[in-house]
Length: 86
Image (cartoon, rainbow, N blue to C red):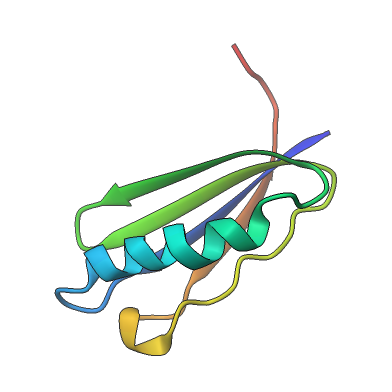
């Protein structure tokens, strides 16, 4: 069973680039080599939102919270089970 784990943070005003850099420098390296990790993708959205989606075969590994000064609110996390792929 494939699970998608979504991690979404909203950057503090003017800090979206720093938050994205933190994801690339800290969050992604912490996941590399984790058992069951199939794929990762980092996305950006208006309003300074940064989304990290990871796909897992089995239980996902939790992504850490970024430094508090980089975010405007607590990180949101969701897990989904794959239902259909084309």
